Length: 252
Ligand code: PGA
Image (tube, protein in one colour):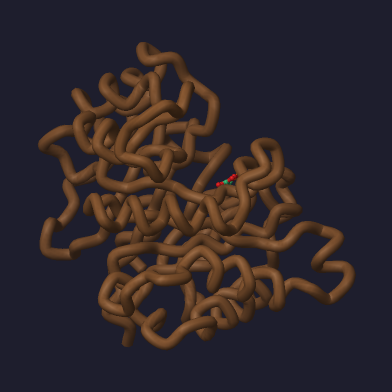
């Protein structure tokens, strides 16, 4: 039996103004049954930067933690438009999603930049949630395993083995994100096993599945040996659906 605690993360992407985010966070908290603190399972909301303070005001002192969707690797400096780890910590953020495929694809984030961000997040005590996954073309050409292993080892380059349990990985096949075409759970489990095998020490690291997760399919992922939770996009914008996912994860 794994000792890894479940983790469910709602990635709100570029949705919700501060006021809307506050309402959504309130709705999540209102629907969430009392959680057993001894379970040590984690539920995280990751709103846009502009809504972090509003959501923090709602979730502070609750079992729900705050996450960001990106950060810069520097402490401060001439990086117009960027946000640093100390700025996130100041807003009560504890988790940060790094290397999401939308960041890689639309903002050309490289493996090397993602690695710098992972190391910076760890050095500030933030928990990185590092996303990896193949495109449809890579899957069709038999490159899936090589791609996720390369992304994982690049993202974790130079990370102390003792820090591997202080980060989480998310397997998010790019073709499954926001498409309604979720990866069959057995195949997702196989790829998550491959990710776990990238480095010694990853047996203690949480690996999440992400890509068209819904309350109807999530239990099949949670039943997989290598799956420790979910990184949820679309379904996290619906308080009731997200709470159903959290309940499934905490019960599994
Ligand atoms: P989705 O997004 O659940 O809408 O597919 C997942 C993600 O991008 O993290």
